[in-house]
Image (cartoon, rainbow, N blue to C red; front, side, top):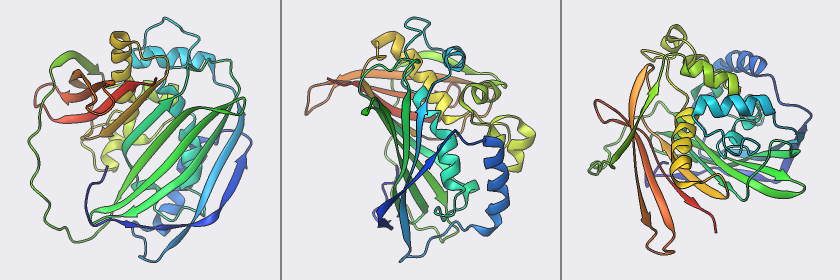
Length: 312
């Protein structure tokens, strides 16, 4: 996430407003609305802006067993324990909730300018596909930086009134401001390569079918070029899920675990990437932590960096 020292926190007005919806929003309608309202939304926020703290709630959500099965295949998860939902899958029901959030009147920023830069999730225990879940998406923070606006959302999954999964999604919006000199970049240390991961040209369409994220720049290059990309780009969440699937086979993380990941450069499909990781003990807790990264196989440029550890 953004480490710039010139960070201004935008106040979120309380008490919190709760908006309850009855079903997952239609992504087609969300994209249509996003395109309609985009010309009337800015990529800037005034210094003294006050934004209402809001939570969107969806109760009695039943995961789709067939979609989870296909998700496992698309993302490379093992077929063992097929009744357990992969830890990364529980982010996908929030795609519609986040879409509704950023196209609603209480969200002030241009919905088409958001770039997913960070994702974390903490799973308290294994969650099975036959559990009825309650979902909550809350605007957690908005920060102004020298480069743009950082927006964070808290994602919560409840089962029988207890929190079983919690995620944080952070998005970045570039602002048209004068760039300041940045600090010198630290030396990029490569982790040992363990596996080659391929992203064929149809990866975006396959992941869209199991996640519901039909952002056009992930589907076909002709659409991606309209957004300024040279070719269609893979979903960041697909790359993270694919990495977790490999780590799960090695370290067995399908139980309670925490994952933190930062998305770096886009993956232009088709692509060949190298997965590197190392296991070390945390200096304070002495708990084993797996550091991982996904890089372009030829040039070594980073696509994804993060860490994972099992919860005690």
